[in-house]
Image (cartoon, rainbow, N blue to C red):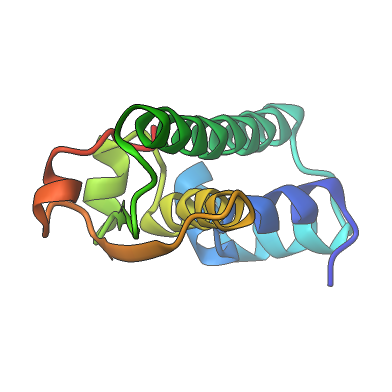
Length: 138
């Protein structure tokens, strides 16, 4: 396990090393050297990953706040459906660099919703009436 800032942020985003290499336009060997600490990741990449982690955290918190508001107005739901991006293209349309980054955001929201007492079912975005009209985790 990496103990570098880059490694910690990469894990927190859900991005793989291969995805990070493609995202930042560098070779996989470069990402591996950042991850292991052999080389320092550029500050702008650290900042970008840190910003993504913060955005993911906010989106997960906002999703649970929205569930709470709806539960207060309409009564607690039996199960909350959360939609996940089925492809990188769909994730990009939501403001995430990859489907795995969107999946990590959904996972954060699921964990927080579960901790708040809500049951959650994961479904591909737009496959049910609820996810077709739902607020996007963006």
